[in-house]
Image (cartoon, rainbow over all chains, first blue to last red):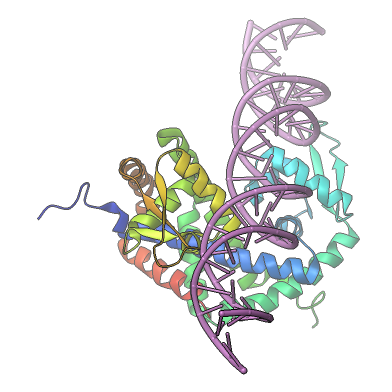
Length: 152
Length: 152
DNA sequence: GACAAGTAATTGCCTATGCAACTATACTGG
DNA sequence: CCAGTATAGTTGCATAGGCAATTACTTGTC
């Protein structure tokens, strides 16, 4: 009647779900990152930053907001933005009301590159997402991920 | 009638879904990795390897299977297994029928540590998954992720 | 207004990991 | 059986990223 130990949790349904999430994410990001690198010579992290900047209401974010948005440490974000700035895709701007803060702003060149990357992204999504999930399934998935992702 | 450019895809529903997947994964793995490190002094990658080994039918996997299972390069996997072996959690075993191949096998010590890590994992899942998704929602999510994750 | 505590960003240092080159072994067709 | 090709794993090298310490600024308290 009794299982190996604490009811053998390695086959628990939630353990499997967590593993599946990691796995799905790893495979999709990996294959998309590869395609993005091949077609646009752009690392996935750059794409994430540029996308977050475009989505931001003011079209700009502060360093710590970038870090939060892409789930990086602030230290890592500093260097990531260094690289993006060196590539001319973003610029740092001082904040007039708080001299500690720095805004990250996308440049025209950054916008062009993001548009290009988004075209590649749409093709990728067509192949890897639209072909596997219907529109209803996609919105169901989005809803579930949102719930799972809720801050406490 | 016409949008900014290719129909402004940065707000496309699928783009958002992809971003949400990255984000959810990043937040959950980060917070779980932190907890695992605090409570078991075990990196998330070690946990993934040990879990995959326990799930494997024979209780062992070859190097390339480990790499595939955890979505790492083979080079990265070599060194990851180096570290796990140095910590005494797995051992490498020669394959009698193919002298190129190497089996990775979990040790008793590895099993003990994995059990401990699984307890921490279950607590984590209780807090972060069970509290946000019902059982039905979890299985719906698993189904959707599986479809999305399907190899072509 | 001065001091303590809090916050934003950067930096030093370290580790993990990817890619490509390499070695060793296995398979395949003549 | 040999040559050529494919496969398994490891290594050199380079880079991205985390953590903790640091600097600079701000806010709150008296």
